Image 1 (cartoon, helix red, strand yellow):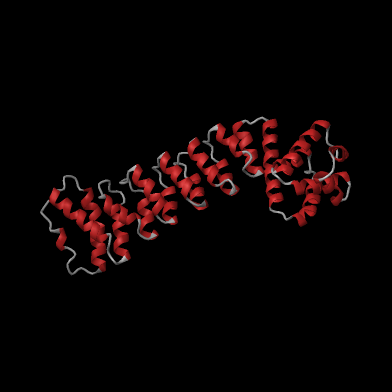
Image 2 (cartoon, rainbow, N blue to C red):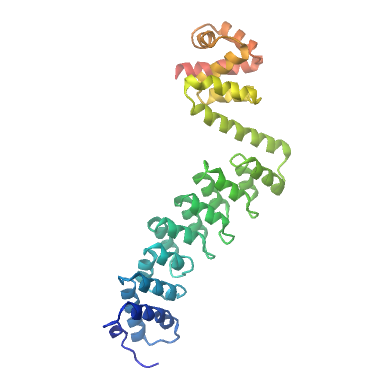
Length: 318
């Protein structure tokens, strides 16, 4: 190949000419046995073009070099941190970055660029974990939908922890057919009923276990509603839960474990058909005998009454 003075090619060139030159840089990087002097000149030219003020020039460069495995790291990093229309197509395919580079990049690139990285067909477990921990719900969904992304237990654990309250993201995770059985079971109380049914069938979870997990998920949702409800609005909530057949012994015991004494008192007044003020007086100030009688009237067993009294004493002392 004839010696080329690449450094002089930019002199007097307009944007269109520089964009055309950017297209040729990828060919130079792909050329076998390119003389070292010309390679050094090509690297300098690529770095210069990556800083060009014209967006089209930088875009042509990113497309031309995205498959180059010998692209200098500084140039690659500059492209990776460019605007999304330039960085995303590059980040989705480039193989020039080390694992350490990817860990740093995920923290510094844009949200759109993270989505592009989540679409990669080449992805380590460490990169998948970083995307799960740092990305938003769109990044998480993209990662989950990427069949090339490793869904190991550590990756899934990061997704579950990160999006525990975003059940639509975890519903997508539940649709994957390559999850470890332990991940499927962990998802059971965090996804919708439809997704839970799919998990039961796919991972052959016994009906009793599935029912128990579904009940736990239901209790968790109800406790969230209880926590978010002002004391003055607890009665309508209790009545709605009761109409749905969900005002169970287990829920009332869990409400005490959760510190929701006011909810317990309102629920108890409904069960015992007693004025709320009287129930609160018994629970908070009167003797254990009166409390035991009230709890028995509400339908609790002797063992449950002892357990409830212990929990209430703890809440009084807190």
